[in-house]
Amino acid sequence: MEVHKRRLRSVADVFDQEREELARFVAGAARELEAIGDFRGDGKEGAAFFKGQGGAGGYEAVTGQIMAGTEAWLGAHREIAARLRLMAASVDVADWESIAAILERLPPADPGRPVWGTG
Image 1 (cartoon, rainbow, N blue to C red):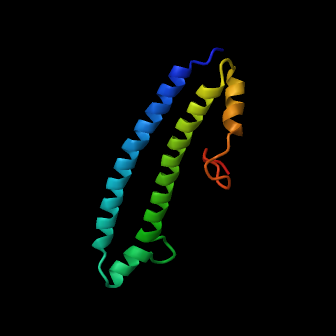
Image 2: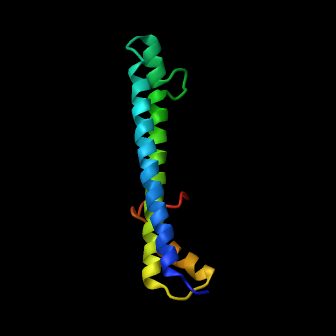
Image 3: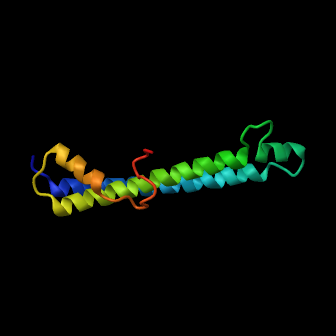
């Protein structure tokens, strides 16, 4: 199969655009989460809401998980765009198995943490 470099770069641009839109959305959501947290108060109910109660995760833990997940999502968008551009710069003709092999062998941004959401 012939690799259409312009199309690969266009798809990479779309991932960049989507990442920027997602980042704006996440920033807005983070502001809303912080505002909700400000209403917790300092009493017993506020502490239970913030820290959790009876072994359940509280607001603090849950929002931390949400933010970590969205950061991974944004990072994946950045990495996909970068890998598509690398492929466009170095591949002329390939089959899908070769493309998958190339993407699989490219190092993730953080070698200790896979980009693709596995293991």
